[in-house]
Image (cartoon, rainbow, N blue to C red; front, top):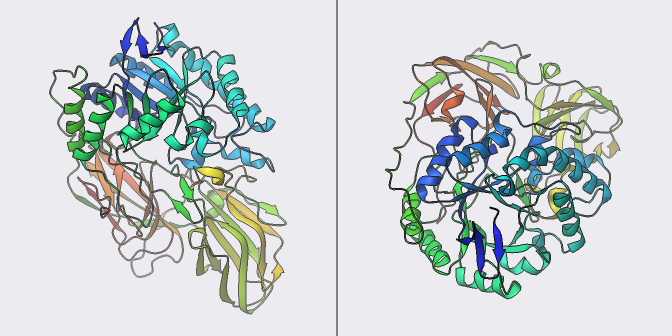
Length: 583
């Protein structure tokens, strides 16, 4: 039977029911590890798991919709049901989640003036198409049809963004029109509950502390019905240049106890954070742009490799006071790789081989990444300098980090994070070649900044005169197979960005961590799988390597270094280094 929302709480199968859930985002976990994480959810004593659905990952381009591999949501729902777990589904269309653009596809931004998260007809038409693709695959899993999905979230913390109930009503109509007949719910921080709710839809609250105050505000805004904290924050995310944020197990467990003692339902954010593989991390911008790191460890109950933490055990003890917990032993930590140093002894210069990574598009002014039909990665802009001698390059906006080269030589970097717009250098001659490599470091995922177009925005000038005749080359780095790697010369390291590659052998795959001491900034792949970004700025200095991406025998590591490395070796390790902990 479906979930019922009664005046005194939830009911399931005509009996009182309390949701005890944990967040687990399938798209941040290798699909061969889903079953393991779901089993650990059940062993914790959870009866439910929660997941977002990232629209931008499922629909990377208009007219395309993917449900394969790591995006096989029906398989994830089958595995949850096999463990006896219910599911709270959060399809957005906006999800925040510290995810690239909050899950909104970048191709929406090709529309000039489009208002995301609004009744803009262009946005609602796109949402309608998204739900038309997604929901037929989800419909068999709704609880009304015997499936595990108990409820579906409407938008996400909308009260922190706007207050147009007409927009929420339009989304609710779309969900219902596409067959969602289980309860809908909204979630907002306590101060935003009035703006983010919709009459007739269950309100829930998000908080990590001050439990009594949060529940009291929820009850004030919703006098009857279930009390639920839909995001009980037990840790936090990290940003580049910051520290690793943690929250003590005892403090977090005590607040969980207060929640459950009050009779509330809860979704623990997070059971397991996982990883922002590839280029999928988001960013925040409240006056200064701050990109999120690759690890989404979040100080969750399961660490990035899926192993139970002391916080997991503390939460299990609390849950056992209020609900049945399986009388089964907790699993041991998964096997880990032994330390191994790997030499990356071949390389391919990015600027020399850019032609193998994307086709140039001529334009009068630098096209944005969205205009190039690209979502993530880099754009290489090229033009000709008309002057010799002292020169000042000025850019309207850099989104997000630009490395500037003249005749192949690096002359400086412009960073959005540092509010930089101009760079002085010396042009060697009229007609010198100008190249600007721009990295999308992650679209803003919270607030009005989600309208975050990437690349070089606005006019680009040299000594006050506009530069014309540009080539814009999209470099999504989704396929590196066309690169030609040559033996590296230790005495002559490459100038500028370069891919470095090396091989190693394993008897048996296991989880591990890739350490990049001596490297500056870039991305890493193992056997073609994108591990994510690294940056010597920290806090994290290792990248998680899931066991399923490795194989017995020969394995291959590729590292893109955007600057230079003095020691082209990397190390596989059995433990992570997520950086110094915040006091």
